[in-house]
Length: 277
Image 1: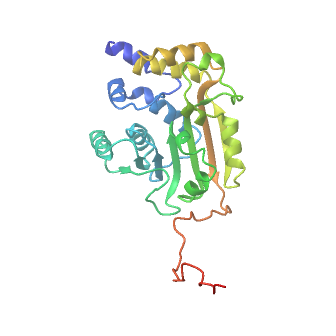
Image 2 (image 1 turned 45 degrees about the vertical axis):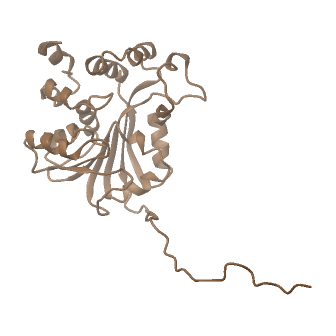
Image 3 (image 1 turned 180 degrees about the vertical axis):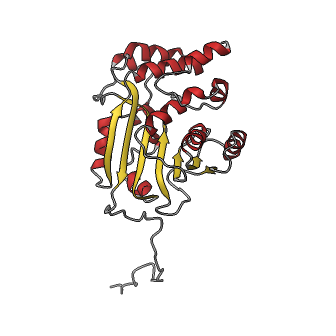
């Protein structure tokens, strides 16, 4: 594919900031089924980011979104991921000239090495589905946000929830791990019922399925199964989902239990021997 064709397919009037980035740089660091710069720009349309803010980019992949956040909004970013090398991400961050404000961290989303209330905002691009469906997770994650700090997620999801069975046109592609995909309304309820977050926004991207398809044809044109499913579905079930909320100042966040203090007291193992008759 020629450079000009790449330029045309990765330029979108919807995402003027993302369209300024070199498509070869973007393709050298992609790590998922969504264009990380498109998703980040779409999410940031509904975030209030100011220079100097501390932002956790959770599940950052190869730190493309982290670099974008630093360059476009002047925030400090902790680029945190479990699956991708922090050393590689650091090199990419250095080459992008943002080492002064993007910090590569290797960590599990369920064991984050940060102080409570450290971040002004937390974003997660196309990765929150892998851990955020846990009913206890929002209580854990919100502890790292300042009161009224924003949490935003964007990525692949469902336009509406599936019934108990998978529609016929999705079955060839659907695998058990895809049950983590949910609709914007599902995510809204998932967060609201905790009384931890006030929801600012829960929506889907217009024609998101088409952008998913376009992106996939560029980065994984040999994946005929997924391409065929997206073309058959045409946004009936599949697309991109976005959710933004704020940590309630009065929210009661319980400390996670990591150990239970105990003191061993030695006692006889067996009952005392009873007299025989």
